[in-house]
Image: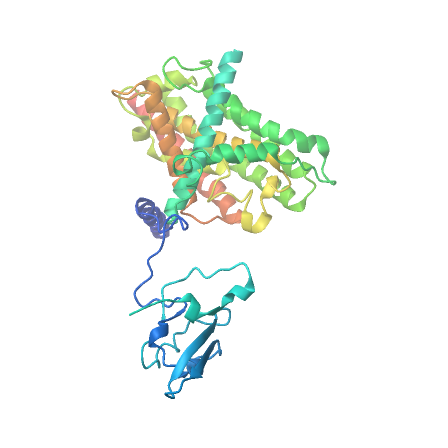
Length: 135
Length: 311
């Protein structure tokens, strides 16, 4: 008999839980219409402030998947000048290890998470051309 | 008569469309989702779109099927769920035919549905369908007994089987106050009668694909769907009539009170469906035969004793 009352109480408790959820707002976002605001330290794709980059290649070395290629010319003043910053989004694992060693904070992870493309070739981008972040 | 039948059919179709949308919304919000949102206001026209899709779908009859049984089954199920509407009192005068044996008629015709479900299971020529059909037959026949036994005390108290007379007897106090246990037994058995969770072993998705309607598609499948929700409406109507005072209530017109009570009971059924897990077959049978039936008998006995004492 004791069990019977315990079971009945637990059934009512269960109904209470679902009723509570029924009255709460839904967590679903209607995606294309509603957008999600990523948290501040969210790691989207790698992004570059081309003017800040000194082509030291620390980022390329830090990358565990070798998905960054830094191409540069050496000028008459022996300073490196960035010409191309090839980023393979298809192999990137969004770990953020490239952004950490950057001495000038030229490279960082932005909030862009909509990275789907129609052609695989589009996943290999030159950040010097794509990004125009200025700071 | 044809006008009445057409009116009732129209009401049933619209009501079922609303109920399907409502159930999808309730299930969604219980799971913190939104449910249908695109077609119409908050997805209100989604069921119409789905019905159109079902109408246009191909009617597949599998090779092993017993063709005639397979074709007839959805009709039997739907007709059995639709016939009780003849004796349903929507309001004081809004009743197709106030039969003196209305309650008996409703119980009798609605239990024909089990034959249709068994026909569907047998006619499909599929092991899952057959298992589903046999389970349903066993379940519905078992739960029919406590269901009828829980109604008996009300009939004893009113001395009538006419729906309007029973409602009239609840002018001052609803019978749920006199017979709370009978109401609980009735409601639990009713949920089992319409094969809804937690008693949905007939179509247990995780065990039997979809049970008796595994092989059905298109319009025939939608007939089963229509019948399921119509049955829900019918059992809620009986509960409202017998225990909740039917169409009686202050201020609002009779039909409004009636539909409010019926839809509230349907809401409770949906709420239960999206809360509890499914019972095992043996647990289901144990519950009907070892718990509900003795309790229903005890309830009749107590009612009879009290009535004899009062007299």
